[in-house]
Image (tube, rainbow, N blue to C red):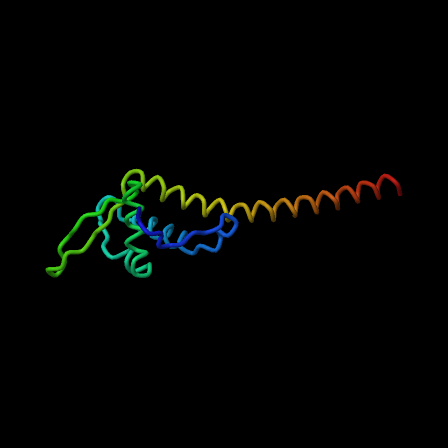
Length: 130
């Protein structure tokens, strides 16, 4: 069994994990060039040493990305491309971010609507009893 690099997090503290946003942005960037482009160094550049390799290992294990070795300037580099399952996850992550923004807007609209209904009800009562 491999060592847990990221750490063990209590469920109620999940919002303290910054890795989610980095993975979400990275997956969306991988989606931008699909299927024509493969990217190298994208995970290693965004995570601390060791964590990037662990993220790649987990994403490969769950078949969200596929990795291959490519030669750049006579050096062997690991390059990545999304799999069809990875595309689905990237799209879902984008929709989740949109849903979070829309949730805030929905709450604002709801408060505005309730406030207006109170004012309308008040006006109706004043009109009926004056």
